[in-house]
Image 1: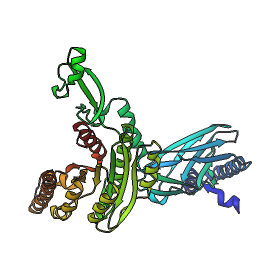
Image 2: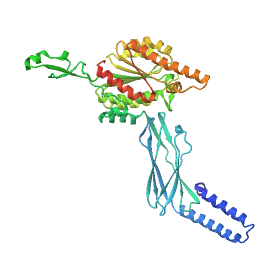
Image 3: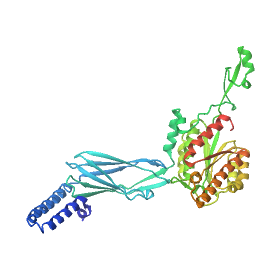
Image 4: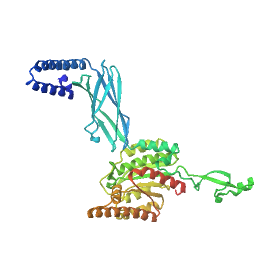
Length: 442
């Protein structure tokens, strides 16, 4: 029974069978071909039996799927398949891997060939768009020889589970570029540090361009020439990423939900802030409070943040900014930089939350980060060819204008803003952080 279940016929088998059938039909008119065709049929059967004996003489293939410890959300992740040919002849392998249901891919098919007594490694990539547990099924390999009439199926019970975490690949990308001083290549601005914060660094000799307000008169009198105080950016400042997990963050762009863009940005930004000596924390909320992670500056804190972000997900409820304001007043007592990831599609929805945002901004530096609707933007920029298209374009332009009104409304109340396309979120968030540090606003 196992023999029958593992035996498969190849397309070449049916091509040969069809050709023999046509020859039998032709032999009706050319009777001299009849005997030759039967010889071909006998040879066909012999080749089949010979290939069966070759493939079933022993267990000639070992296969194994190699997965990373975890996947990075929204990025291409490598999956390796290791194959070992124990046959003494060259084999051709067709591979059908049972991918997790989240990928919705039912046409996975890869082919390769392996010389006798040799190994081969096949690599392919997967791009998850949701966090969570991904379960891989069996690894199915169909082996044939150079004859190519039948296949033997090998099924390797290689069920594996891998967790998809927020984009740590994106986090490492920005980390590497920051160290390499190539921030401009990805749109990050290199902002000059003005140095008017309150953390004293050293007394140095005055040079043209130094702020005369920082002249140290006692040191000047002692040395006989102008000396100035030099300051550096304050470190160990608390910075919180606040993620709105209400239904407004469920909206998808380029297959990824807004909340996943926010989570990926939080991880990448927090890594940069930690390397600059600041403390990072996190809050998520909707109609009630979710996770609260106090700000810390330890390097191991990034792993805690990663595990916390892994479990953050959207709720199909409206967010309660009153609860957020109460948490900030009760838990975050030191003046901090608060990066609020949310979304407003209409100015009336912003106006309902303005009293809470203003109350938070009185004691902290609040940055409200919300998203451009890129699909409406592309619609408003296309040329309209009919009256319905003109109407659609006008509505889209009105929504775009509302976003600009929201930015102005927030700025008039002393609240920092970032209005960004989802794919530019991380870059613009880091830029805003660098700007605030350079201006000494915190």
